[in-house]
Every structure is written in C-alpha cells, then in structure tokens.
Length: 283
Length: 316
Image (cartoon, rainbow over all chains, first blue to last red; front, side, top):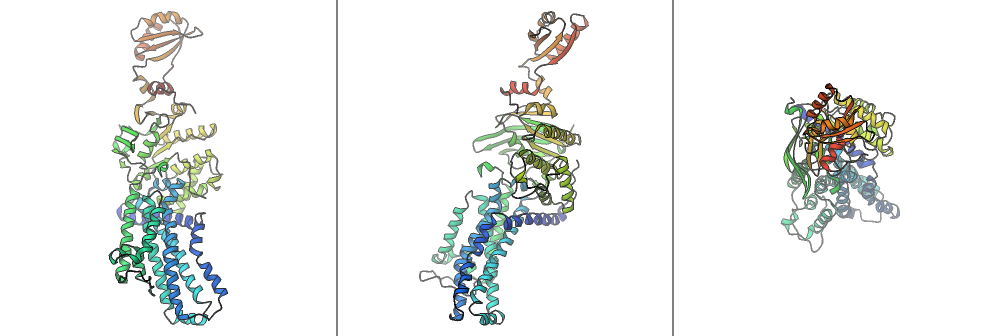
C-alpha cells in the first residue's frame, strides 16, 4: 500500500488550498450535526420560542390602537433583554460548547484527531460552522421578531418605516449586533467548552456578569461583551435608576475590539486543542 | 539496517496520568513488519499506541514515527492509520459516510474519497453493509468499519488496538490474512493483543509489557533464548528414552530429564539449547538412540509470557 495522499503532500505555498478544503469538509460535517441532529432540537426551541408570544400578540391585539412611535423602544427593550442577553447568549452557549464537548461525551473526537489535519484548522472549521448556525438562526429571530412586532399592527406605516424611514437601517443594525454577539460569545463558549469539564457553571457566571453590567463602574463595564454590543444599538435603552452611566464605546472601537478579542480567544482555543489529549475516561 | 525514517522510535518515553504510571522509560525501535504488543490489561499497550499516534503526549521523552514527531498530526496521519479500541462513532452515519467524511477531512477530493472508501470496504468485506447506519452494525462489523477507516487513506504504518476483538472465527482468519497481506506490502503493523496464540501466529516480533514496563522484546524465539533463568524444555521422541535420559543427564547444562507418560519420549530441561542439540546429534550419530522427533515445549509466547510476567496472559 503506497502512501497515496499525493494531494495532501504539499509544501507551504499550497497548504492554504488544502486547509480551505479541510475547513470545508469539517464545516459540512458540523453544519449537518448543528442543524439535523437530535441536539439541534433544543437550539431551534431556544431560537424560535420567543417568537411565539409575538405571533400570538399579532393576532389577539387589534391593529392601530397602540402608539407606533413607541414600537422602536419596545423592540429595543425586547431585543436587549430577550434576544441578545438570553436567546443569543444561551443559544451560542449550546452551539459552541457542544462543538468539542459533545464529541468528547460521544467519544468520537478522536476521529478528527486521527486525520491528517492541523488541529488549528479543526478549530477554525468547527468555529465557522458554529458561527454559520448561530448567525442563521439568531439573525432570523432578530428579523422575524421585528416584522412580527410592527407589521400586524401598523401595516402601512410599517411599510413606509422600513422602505423610507429608519426601519431598515435599524433592522440591519440589530442583525449586525446579533452577528457580532455570535462571534464574541461563540469564541468564548468554544474556549470554555475546551477547558472546563462542566461548562454550565462558567456560562452562568458570564451570564450574571453580563446582566450586572449596568451596575459596574465604567472601567469594569468594558470587560464584557454586552457593553460593546449595547454601544452599537440604534435605540439606546435605559438600564434603570441604579445603573452606573458610562459613555458608549464608539462603533469604530467597539467592532474592532470585539473582533480582536474574538481572534485572541480563538488563538487560545487553538493552542489548547493542539495540546489536547484524548482521555475519554477523564472527560 | 533500517534508517530512523523507517522506524518508530521511542526515546526514553514515560507517561504518567497524575501519579498513576502509564508506561515508564520505554526505549523501543519498531521496524517494518508485524509487531505485537502483548500484556495483561493495564500493562500499557493502549497507552503506548496512543502515545505513538499523538492522542497522548509523553510526560518525558520523545517519539518519532518514520521521522515525524507525534505532535504534528497533519504530517503524521498521512502515513499512519490507527484503529483504536473506542467503540464509538459519529451519530447517524452509514459506514460509507463515516469513511468518506474523514477522508474529506484528510484533504482528498470527493471522487478520490469515494474510491478509497470503496477499496477499504472491500478489504474488510463490508461492501454489502456500507450504506446501512453504523448504529445498527454488530460488534464485529463495527470493528471492521473502524479497521476500514484506519486503512482507507492508505497509510504506511497501521496501528491496531485489539483488532480481533468481537470478530467471529471466520472473519478473524480473514483479518489476520489481511494483516499479513498489508505487512507483505511493506507496512508497519503494530498490533496489541492479549490472545497469545493469535499473536504467535501472525507476529514477526513481540513487545511484552507488564505494569508499564517493557519486559522483553524481539523475535519470540530470540526472546525465549535469552531467558537463561528459565531452562528451555524440549521433548525428544525416541526409541530408548531411558537410555537417552542417562546419557543427557551427564551434561552440566541439562537440569532435568523426565520420561514422558507414554514412556516413548523424554522431556529435557536445558540451559543451553544449542549445546543440547549438538550433544543429541552426537548421540544419534553414535547410534545411542533413534530419534523420531524433537520439539521445544515452551518455546511459544504463552510460556515466555508466563515466565516473564507470571500469568498465562489469557486466551480469549
């Protein structure tokens, strides 16, 4: 039997094409698991459950009796409290922690480790698959929630608002924030899924840290994901009478900061996976 | 003489799990051919295999497989295939999908991955079940699909952890034949087993492990020869065993001579088998006895195992 991996036996300049091909293969495998496995049922539930009350309200509330101008604030509150802080947070936790943790539990991670693939490439492939899954599901929720809030009650005003007014810009901004949240939380949860045997505890700790962010002094606020995301929202939301007010971070700092931190966390995750051993008994 | 690029080299390798010893101070060079790792449960066989495939990292020392350090999977697994003992699979896949998906991860294009999967399935006789879910496979079929996965990318080193477990006798024989074919093609085959007669049947070399230490290595008969403290036992079938007993007992290297129960043979224990055979040739040449057959009684792996480790090793 010859070593017939001619296609893989490449020198440095050609490695990029090999890595991209491998990332593509890992991506397809993981996407299938993320969307079509039994585990994915919970993620569909997390992603679309908040839409159910909006759907019901759309039918039971008579159209036109509410104040249209208040709707942007209603959506901002709903987005902040339910979509961003809860749905995207826990959804990302479930998706990204399971990228490696689920395979440790199923005792099938070694098949990846026994393939001729750099473990860093494995991290990238899995992360991108998690990212694609979370972005597709949660931006869909972000968009559908806004549509369900506006259109059933004020159809014609809503059409004008989204075609001529600020509606579309706001919608795209919220969707963009959701994407950034998936990036940031995703990297963090991937990381703790690799380091911690029971990732629920650090996930809850982060959850409370993010929720208590409004009470933190300005310097500590910046050690959180939610601070940068809140800085980007098109309709600022009051954090209550006890909130410590801090200047929002400008978008040109917030977005690159999120991306840089995400990259650093991914580098740490790649380092961890490079040195990881397969000992299912102890996992 | 093999060069380092043709060998699997363990250089003073130790592995500890916390305070628990996995293997200790392993110095080993494995050349092409079939090498068996033998030892009771917990001896360190799987640890050694996981170390040479980078699933574990040594606490001390270094390992190179055909000149490649084991912490470079992207290079290592172009040459190495490993069939582990983990009887688990990704969920929901068929046998063919299982092979294809990891060939794609290796970097093969879809057409080549399909071809390689088909060849591997044929080699393990699993073509008919290839499109069924792995979850519905019998234990033997799962073992074979894992074997197929380990050979599908055409490695030059194949590491197999208890590869015959769960196989029925027919498939067992076929699998051993496959191993021989692969070895004849120039592959390194490293096989762990606790079934001694199978190891005896198929191995060129054995590495005996106990409690994390290598207790003996080499050609099974060579290992036996080196065990001077355990005299070799030989059965001589001849016409006058009593006369032969008197004759051999005068030799200083013979420590015991005992008649066979049927009184048509003689068991001799000697510390120097070469001198004994020479002496026996003289006896035959001088017409002292008419020898029908000569056979070492404890020149097999089971006896070596018992002498070195103090157990029989198990037989199934």
